[in-house]
Image (tube, rainbow, N blue to C red):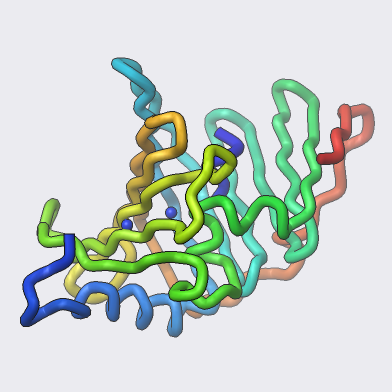
Length: 202
């Protein structure tokens, strides 16, 4: 679950960069992103779906909240806080050790996509979406993911993300009520561990 915080066959020659351009345009115009999501994780023959909300202010600030599981992931652009309310535990990580190894780097990161990832189009229109594939240029077992697929609707709005981690687990995230360019309070990206919880530094 933690690796999932808060993200991708070359196309026909005539449209070789059409869909990757959709990704570039989306990120260029999405300085802030707000949405509800449904996330399904498939491990072997088992699957589990959770609901939540996300807020992103680029670069590197995000709030990813699982409403059912009472889990919260917050980045203030310096540190990432992972709060598990049922376990009464907060894990704190330095941003540079986490965000560049997860799909959050694609949506919230400041890095040039081309420098850290191989971006290519996918020759499919599954679910009526334009799909882009993103592969980390440097792959190892410590990466939070190995492959990310991002699906955009006809208006260029992000609709789905699908990714596979280094263990072969597959995660699918569907977004709804997605808005870009909206005002998000700075306080949404701050987090103070509640009194009495265990705090772990990584």
